[in-house]
Length: 104
Length: 104
Image (cartoon, rainbow over all chains, first blue to last red; front, side, top):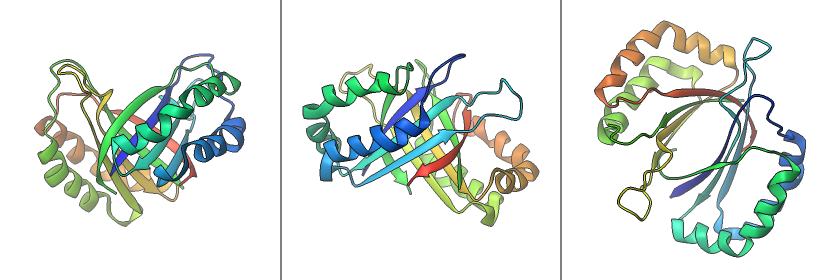
């Protein structure tokens, strides 16, 4: 199994609308990507104890698929639609990581 | 629930011994952290199609706990022992992210 992670690296003054992301963008992603995605995880970074302590990543999302080819087959036809929605919730350029799931 | 993620950002020439990490460091982590950790995930970055295409992160590990306090209570007494094992498998300085699990 592979996990495609989408990470949003924080920066001072970055904008990230958690409620839009959770309630609009992620349901849209699940619907557009369809059954090739076996599991979806979303983690929202917690601020540190100080006022200016931002987490390294505003959010980290994971899509679990059987193979990279399964993910690409689901993602490629809907990539434009998903990417065009990004400015609705953030000005952070996401980082994409493709991993083999070895534990978990 | 919270997830404490340990991310190893790649760099050219970085060293990361996947087998040591999976077979020695992660079992040691699970044993030392104990029952406060409810789930452990490990993802190993896949190289891209080109010879020099390294994934953004060599590895991403996640510890799921009920609360940040649960994690810190488990981690603090064993932090030195765990951190002293890092050079055995990598020369990458890990990035620590503490997140709220919102989906998954």
